[in-house]
Length: 364
Image (tube, rainbow, N blue to C red):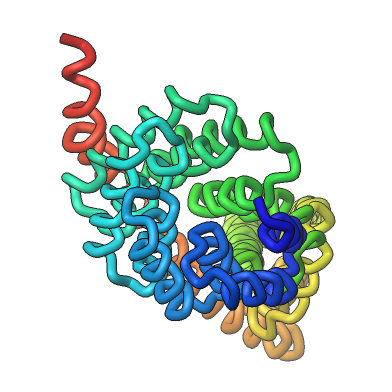
């Protein structure tokens, strides 16, 4: 291995892609057909999200060494990033054919097949997942690929186990933490998802993917805040209707309901990462609406059934705003139930059309 290659590898490993590219440029000026240099150059472009130049570098490497799996594997990645899925799958299969004993070729094929998403592609992806696990059961990337496969077939429990296995092997793996947070979020657990993202956001606060997932988590958390706020004032409204003129009963219930709601909301808020707390506070609609819902609880207790014009004047706008927030919460809750039902149907469908056909030959 030349000194330039060794330095480039070291620089890439610490995220200094531009300096690595300078080292490789000097080597390629002397040896333009160096496969290692071209492949490392492709990885430099990949790290900088320059997928067009990455593809060009991999094509040079393939031309220089058509029997080497690494150029084909990197070319498959570049094609996948450029949304040329069929071509990416073809290149991934070539790499696998050249090196079926490497877990990397199986994992790469899984990624390309997941981008395809068809049932036959998912079956092949499952076969590659199983083979990769046989070849390298202690490799974290293998379990990440398996988790992505299970995520694609709507099996969050299996995906969670894969990401937890990754973290057991590599406790600081940011990809596993992020993907585990996505699983928690899709299962309606925004607070737990926020806890999963805490370390990732602290380590890589500017990463676009993690930022998108953090924003989705914060938005889901505020939606849940409004849903429980709706339950709080509706419960107080029912108690007010039942209790009639017994205002001490209404007031006592209001203290318990509002106090419990605020206490639970505060505890869950404190469990979020600082970046997520900031995103929650910056929500210009959900947080103010949640505050109005909380104020509506004691307002109902004090003003319900009152003949005072002032009491009605204060309670009416609060009820109008709370009803509007409650309608939005109801829509969000309905959408979540529909999405969850669709995922259950998808999971069972994929279990019989993807998983069972692959496992059945092993059982006979």
